[in-house]
Length: 316
Image 1 (cartoon, rainbow, N blue to C red):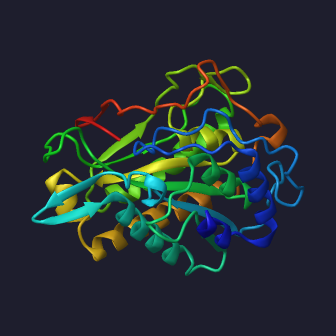
Image 2: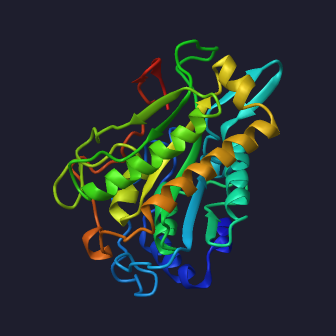
Image 3: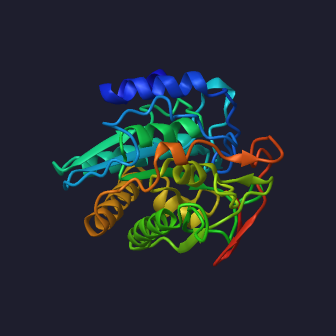
């Protein structure tokens, strides 16, 4: 957590500290894409006018928060990994490289301010606190960058390509969910241009009774769920399958390939923001204080089931 606090601007440090104090700590399972505390941090007493949701930004300077998925500290799993030709490829190390290249590309342009939720693959940040950080700096876009893996320990043939876990529409903060889906699809289009199969959006409802404040069913995946709660555009991007031979060898095994993925993400981010403009932070903190969970337990704290995309089942 020290890593994250060191990356914050001064105005946001007080907010994050208050969130950390007021939030019950919870472990993060390896199925990081899916889980997270069922209750959003109570931020209403600590949100300040200069950084709070509800404040519209009217200039062309964009704020982007990149979240390299997974991490090794605290006994947390480093994400998926796969051994190929005697080399072990780790998701947390790959996502750190992809995010770094995305940041470097965006920072070539003076109107982009980019934050990472951490600066080392060794660090693990609880999922709710990642979204809280993105909200604290008024992120126009919050992108959690991951690498996929399919069921089983060996290579697979029918699960390959890129996808995004994004918030569902037709419920709490519907317009925001639409914006997140559009942004995710724009990035997927750029990745598809590299030659990766586009599996599209993966949308999933809560399976343990978690509800948004308006009583509608919450999202299963933690990053989209918390993004909706905080009123920020946010989603997960999966950059191909480590245990699919073509995805691994063509896109996920060399520094040049990680750079290409990171820059494709950056180009998608820029394309979307230049078209959509700055976020209006559609919900205030008072309206996004809590989610309700009838089972009072973490969502998805189990081995993730398979999901079906355009090329067959896979797992996240």
